[in-house]
Length: 296
Image (cartoon, rainbow, N blue to C red; front, top):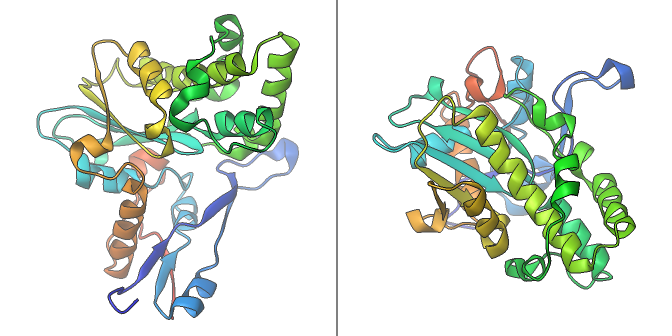
């Protein structure tokens, strides 16, 4: 730890309500596990974290947070790009060629690996936590009629900026999805293939609806755990003809480390008092310095 100046930790999101839901008496709120003081006490290093509340206090949704880093790391003067992270939830940053910070848009596309992983866990009797390289999905056939029904979920018609999480696409959604596959008599491979195509389609359809009519996009750069799912990437490419779909590693970035690097960057900006949110992505009314500090 002697070479570490500070730690920047986003934590694990377990609750995120970006907009008040009066019908269910839910206030705008967010909660990430991984308390900064505990990390600081155990490492002896200053820890920056709890980024989302500052943006929410300024009227934003507190998400997505990575567009600031995406612009710095991947902005290009000539090529329009979409940075698509596929973690539990899918989120994208839109970087038109030669764009500035106030031209960046971003939003959560919907489920990432979340549904696929939960379905695989259940179908394997707890033996598999994910579909390695998309091998199981590759053995099945997606149920396109069922996917056409699921893609009508209200979240997909919401206008960006928008964000989502386990509240919509977590365990309850996955359980209903799995039950629906069994009711339709689908094999395990077909269920996994359907979950994978549904995820790919939710991403591609969001581009068609919100991005391609406004911006010229040349490349879709994928990172996160989903970048290792060959079947998911193949489905994305099929759904996005004429555009390059590539991993972040093709651009010199570790597919699994992009978000970690960006949160280190966000922490560094906090320490130096530099605004690190992107209001055009989160909906905040102004630029703010996101983060809090716990001393080691």
